[in-house]
Amino acid sequence: MKATQFLAPMLLSAAVLMFAAPARADGDAAAGQKTFAQCRACHSVDAGKNGLGPSLHGIVGRKAASAAGFKTYSPAMQKSGLTWTEDNLKKYLADPKGFIPGNRMVFAGLKKHDDVENVIAYLKTLK
Image (cartoon, rainbow, N blue to C red; front, side, top):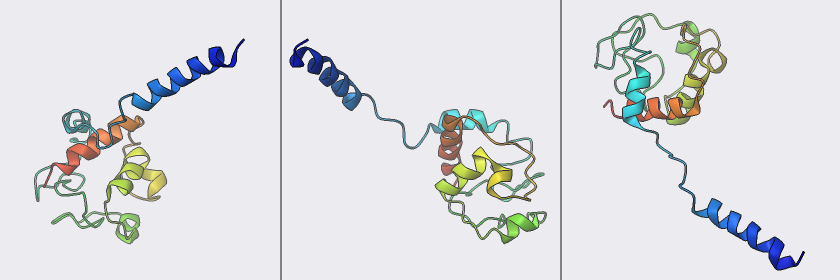
């Protein structure tokens, strides 16, 4: 086999990969709102309206354990010292108990990476 016969398919494959659609970096807020439906059992998205869990209105950029009027944060959450950055939300939403051991969140986490990205995109709209 000539080198050009071997090289041509490799170059074609590389070109296809190079020009393939890039991965969505920010998620899909509309899809995230649908996924968030499972969170509504405990969390509101209305400012100041807490449920079993704190309101998630304005969560992105907020200090952990600081939702107005919510009084039942776990000691683990209170001591976490976290700010809810996108990176921290990704880790928490994927594995709440693993990321902050001892917190009171009973939900096991979102197992699909796209679901995590989409929920964060939705949460970012709640300002």
